[in-house]
Length: 144
Image 1: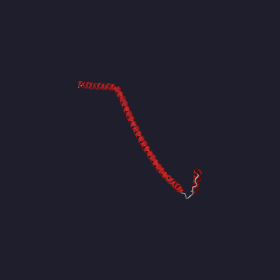
Image 2 (image 1 turned 30 degrees about the horizontal axis):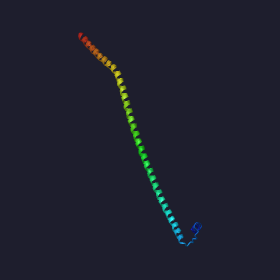
Image 3 (image 1 turned 90 degrees about the horizontal axis):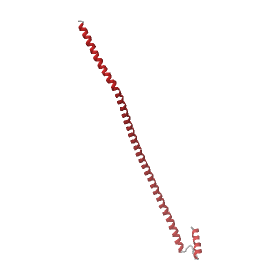
Image 4 (image 1 turned 45 degrees about the vertical axis):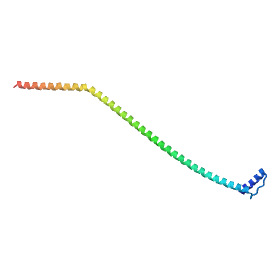
């Protein structure tokens, strides 16, 4: 500190041509000014530290907000893709069921003619069997 005061005394003497001593009232002002400068520097540093803490807090909150928004967006996209996949699977299952039903109906339509023909032949066989039984009964009666 005394080196600074000596440097100041030399500077005043060089610039203004006035000899100032260590006990001069102007040196009291210099000491007060230096003290105030140190206090202001400490206050500024404290304000800067608080500002940095606030900025770090804001950055942390923004990071958390961004993360939660990204999670919500991802969950919404996942739910939408799950719904789309379900509806696609349902549509595919319905299409497969419809195609299977058409194939079964086509196969049944092809079999309907032969089934009708088989019934007609079975009916004719029953009639022929009935006629044979009737003829056998008549033959039996004629022998008696």
